[in-house]
Length: 294
View 1 (tube, rainbow, N blue to C red):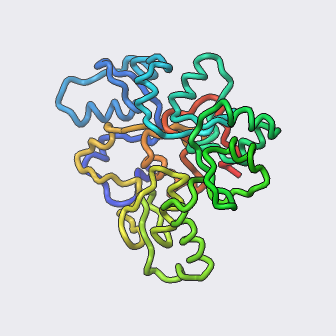
View 2 (tube, rainbow, N blue to C red):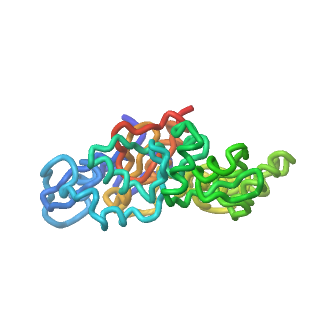
View 3 (cartoon, rainbow, N blue to C red):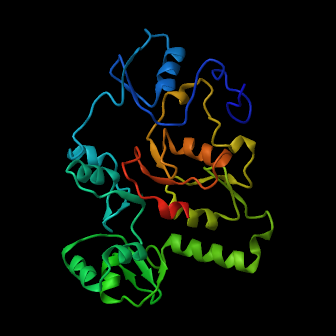
């Protein structure tokens, strides 16, 4: 016998299997399910004819460079191994389909340090800054917002990075406030605690907002410390439909693809506190995540 999840059982748990990992299978109804457990659960929960297993993987393989295919990822920047920040994971997948050796480093824009290590020279940074348009703002210690690391490394390479983003932005202010409160011991009481969507308790709303710059799926669940009911392993649903309606998969820093951000948060809270979201979608080959594990 093994533990299914913390908290009380849901009505369908006894007969409906669940896996947090994204291992897609195609059903005979030509619908892609997050994993075999999700397909099995679909048959348990519905009164329609049973759907059988057709093949491993997604039912339909779309052209990775199809414009609508890239647009469906929205504006969710990722840092690639060439030092460029792309609008979303779809653009990197497109490049990989053309035998490019570019890989994803992490969710969010590339840092100045990462770009500097990849380029190796100021001249290269200046060349790219004049020929490449990219909005990946960096706030310098001179309180200037640079549009991207290439511009900063070209025109003011000696300036230190103050914040990975626009100067005096709401996130910047929250990070400053959180750091100030921690230094002054203001967070020593439970008066400002907030519970995050990852099931973790934060010292203040400012600390949560600041942490959110590295995790776009992090938001406030409620004021006050998290309780057992806030465990991301628990579902708010009662009919078991949450087990088959998986949503968007995400790639974890452990190399596994999870069916949803909540599934990753569940594993993080209960099994691997160092686990992070690397990017949306399935994990790509040769993903560079060394800096996330250090």
